[in-house]
Amino acid sequence: MTLTRTPLLIAAFFFSSIATQTTLATEFEPLPIRTSPVPATTDGVPHVQLGGESNPAHLRDLMARVSRIPGVDIRETVISMSGTKGFWIEEDVSLTNPQSIVGGREFAHMHPDGSLHASLSPALAVKAVKAGWATPHPWANKRLGWEGFVMIYTPTSDTEVDTVYQLVLASFDFVTGQQLSSL
Image (cartoon, rainbow, N blue to C red):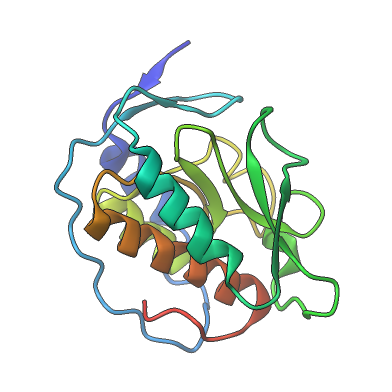
């Protein structure tokens, strides 16, 4: 198993061809630069974060926030490892970018360690990688619509929980066409 230690170089190459694709009409604000160390990840599936500290209080806070997003249900995942919580879009919510969802109506999921996979707009995915928040999923270039499929690293502070939550909201916005996030 090979490790991805510097997602910026991979992302620069990978995202260079999609950076100009059309996204939501929203102009995203610059993401803050993540200051905690960027964890290593596997470069295959299962795609997991290696190491890094997770604080149970931060993970509970993030999960509580996600559970309050209108139109989202927290369920067991259908696409990831046991213990992972899937973030599902309810049936009565329309989808603008259904091709970006990997399975069912699960637009994102959180692993037991607090790392997440989410479908972001390709432009926001580039920004998240450059700012140190995410790395492309190994499947991101496997199917049209998955270009923004990323792993978001485990939040390590209250401030990081805020940014990760905004990324989850932005994922929901991208998939549904809504405008809940401030990114």
